[in-house]
Image 1 (cartoon, rainbow, N blue to C red):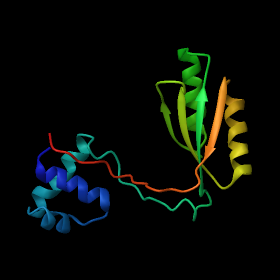
Image 2: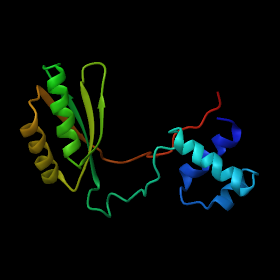
Image 3: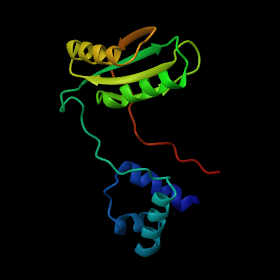
Length: 152
């Protein structure tokens, strides 16, 4: 990626609906070469998807819960069952396999504590877990979907 590609990625992360004409103007290219660069960024997987970011509160899921999961079963079969369970619960919007004391970290969005309890019960019905601890976010200080775009 050259400096123009990086600038295109920065601009599209701010507003993926920006017309090619405006993108081209902002990176000092004509429209066709600009469009071809954006297509190449998509084809190579630099741009994975273009989505609409929604307000969780307006969708009724304004409560964020971080869930630490520990297991005492480190088998491929257990991991596959866990992965399927996590993928089947739409309130689990992020899941990471971790190093250290916690095996998995989940970010869950729900309407309130009762809603989280429902999600928690669905998860523990789906897969055996050794230990689960949850922390409710009190305030969101920073949130961004934009990745830093650095030169190589």
